[in-house]
Amino acid sequence: MEEDPDFQIRFSSLCFITDHVGFHGTIKSSPNDFVVIEIDEQGQLVNKAIDEPIHKSSKVLPEANNFAKKTKIGFQNLSFEEGSNEKVSTLVRYSDDDRNHQSDSEKEDTISDGISKGEEEKVYALGSLLNEKTNELLNQFACDIKEKWNSNSELSGPSPEFSLGRILDKKQRAILHSAVRQKFPFLITVGKNTEIVVKPNLEYKELCHLVSEEEAFDFFKYLDAKKENSKFTFKPDTSKDHRKAVHHFVNKKFGNLVETKSFSEANYNAGNPNAVITVRFREKAHKHRKRSLECQERKVIYTAFTLQKENLEMFEAVGFLAVKLGVIPSDFSYAGLKDKKAITYQAMVVRKVTPERLKNIEKEIEKKRMSVFNIRSVDDSLRLGQLKGNHFDIVIRNLKNQINDSVNLRERILEAIESVKNKGFVNYYGPQRFGMGKKVRTDQIGLALLKNQVVKAVKLFLTPEDLDDPVNRAKKYFLQTEDAKGTLSLMPEFKVRERALLESLHRFGMTEEGCIQAWFSFPHSMRIFYIHAYSSKVWNEAASYRLATYGSRVVEGDLVCLDEDGDDEHLSSSKVHLVTEEEESSNTYAIRQPFAT
Image (cartoon, rainbow, N blue to C red; front, side, top):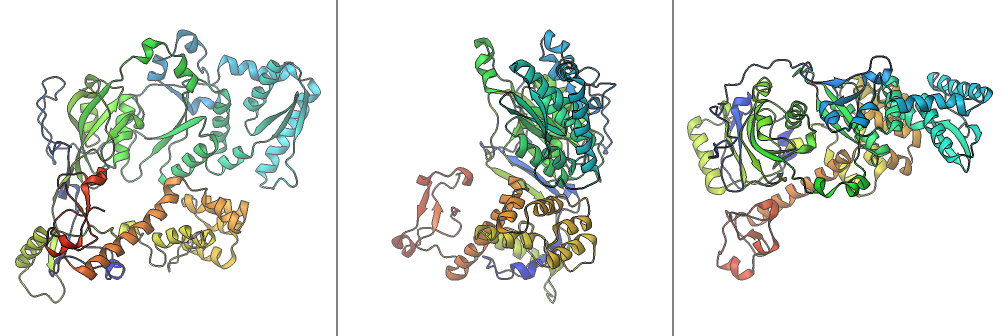
């Protein structure tokens, strides 16, 4: 197979179970060359029709090359309630599904013209609860804060604050707290007994580093309003890393209050895909306790189907289906992720959607090179790993002999096939797990983290390659100077992860504690990725050492799976056997016996 040029250097030390010469070739020249079909727990390929008369798709199952050409999808079929006067109207949207679940009284108090009646009353409260002089001083305080921020000058000394005085009535204090935050989202209010103190909202300023000030302004207004069943949507964003940074900020600061989801924008462009981040308030536990018995006993609808997609990322496909069905991506469950540059078939289950409703969007999703079939009602969702495996149909192109190999190519190919068929192969982690950089690999960063060498991990992350481009010039400057602020001015805007780290380093410093704080600016999934990379390297080297030492013999101390049909992901300890000295001597097990990992 064609690999990156550095592959041989990195993996030359690994020991392989086969010794055939092999050949060169290219895979994934096109999605049609790589077909993945999931195998369910019953051992059935999920692209086969299920004999179920109700809800079964009547059309012929789609062939791999029968997809319509990609077309751009617009939002014209989606309904949002948008305001017309206030800035919040462009960003805060309510779906039809949300409105259908609101009572009449809730509908009357829903955002209209960008702000609810309740919020208007709160803003009006500033004039009624504060005297004219205090009101003027509050406005001046707010203007001073904004001017300092806009001039990029740091707020020196202790955080400035402004007292609104003492408000004895508890209800009036609550109204005043909210009224200030609604009018000035870049300020926060703090209660000191009966006194209300106003301070700069540093989280607002931090968010302005990630999104526009207009979005930050509207987001904090939305957050303070706490409007039940409402959603807030940031502007479309093409950068996956930048979206991760926004997700991480919102969840880190307000995760106990709201949750975030990314949706693919229907106005799709394969080369420059847009996605929007939607924020919604979490359901409160007390709401569940207050639900009537009738609501508690209401059965959740689950609809199972087979999803076929071509040259489409899994999360993009789920996001598109979620928009069309009026649900959120987390309402979908599946047994495993599938390749993008491929034609894939997999089982899925969606909550809160009837089979009839899913069938109604079949034509629409064909434009996205997707199709759904085997649609039926089921009792529960799927879980990761709930499958037997995957069946692959792979086309290898551009076949040629290894350098200095004069043997007939056909013979080499047949030799390789027989060798793998008879001896199997070691499923090593490939180069994509360790990064494509020449100087630093992800496993090196993971090892530094495991050793609590966080400063070293940060420096490794910011180590430049031998390339003369803006990103590597910025990294080179940082390693020479450790000047985080200066490096920020050099680092391109699209390098969201690097910029997030540098901003935190500028704030906390290059000390051990500062680097720990900076590393936590990354989302959890990214932080743990480097640890997993080192674990993968250990697994590769351990498996290679075992093969180099004992070859293909099964020896004392090996672990084997006693149930050849077992699912590796869910092996019970009773199915994993430790090979004894007697079993080694009698050759009880062969190398083809599945090994437990």
